[in-house]
Amino acid sequence: MHKVKIFLRIFAIALLSFGFVIQIDGQKAISEREPLMFKTLFPGIEKYIKFPVGIEVDKEGNYYILEREEQCIKVFKSNYNYSHKIGEIGQGKGELYNTQDFCLDKNGTVFVADSGNRRIQYFSSKGQYLGGFNVQFRPRSIKVNSKGEIYVTGNADLKNNTIISVFNKKGEVLRNFGNVDAKYKDDLIKIVFNKRTYLDIDQEDNVYITFEAIPKFRKYDKNEKLIFEREIKGPEIGRIMKKAAIPIADHKKQIVSNIIAITHDIRVDENGNILIALGAPYIYQYNREGNKEKVYHCYYSENGGKKEIGLFKIFSLGSTKILGTNPFTNCIISNKKIKEDFYEVLN
Image (cartoon, rainbow, N blue to C red; front, side, top):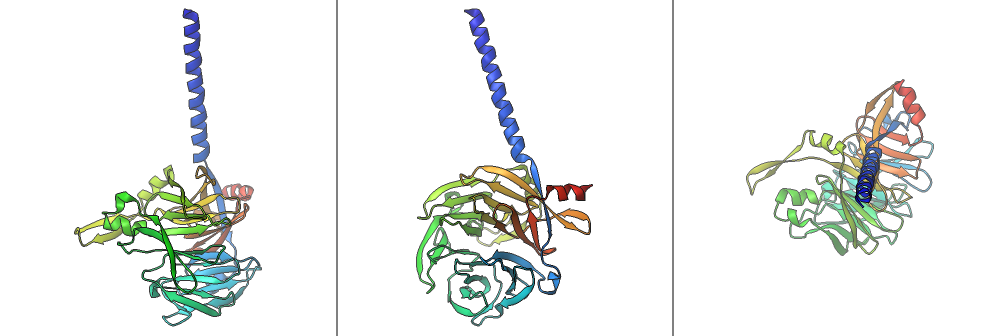
């Protein structure tokens, strides 16, 4: 009997040790960074783009790039040649100011979050002004679902503790959803930045948001019911925290707090994988259940060398490519299957 107890104890210790090894191996696998080597996609793009902050691709493979300096969207054909622009700087119809984001609907209509003018505008793919409407806040991020409903974030109205507003093309508010985290409701700074979010909608009309200054992301179903909220965790987050922060004054409390840009964008690929661009040279990939699967370490290849690169916006082209924008390298592209090229650069 005594020998049996000893055997069972040894077996239990071995089992626990085995489980611990599996856990460590699993953590190690997730923390291993897969290199993404970005290369310039558009030859001579510096003639047309000076400060790219957003990118979309239509069904024909044409590329739309938000150019912040000129306050317009530059369109490039599928062969990467420049085609035309949409909008120009100003305050009139079809003009843009301090534009934060844009998107395409299933028909190729271009919707723009015209933040400086506090309105939403939409254009044909050729650049023809089709309509628009004013909003009571500065729109930050914008997407359109399969029904043509316009989802917008950026509402900093402290009386409305929701994150996402849904409009029709007439500008009528259909509904609001996405509660602000309760623990931030009494903090002016956090509640404002809680609403500085990035947005995406998948093919099934599930809605995804990530917070710029709070390490969390959420998934809602097509009925806008919260499926889950996950905290963004990883050693790369620590690197972000060491970066210079944005000072924000709270006049009511007479203090200044530092708000750090933790994330820059969220995208969902055709397989339901959730990609989050961090405020550093990393992209976290989560599966549709919200479990982290990969960490991409982003580099830019230029003149035979390489350097780390952080992305302002990303766009997933299936399971093979990720597009990204960066104001210092212009528009770039990465192919997930070029590890051999990456190691050639290293050597």
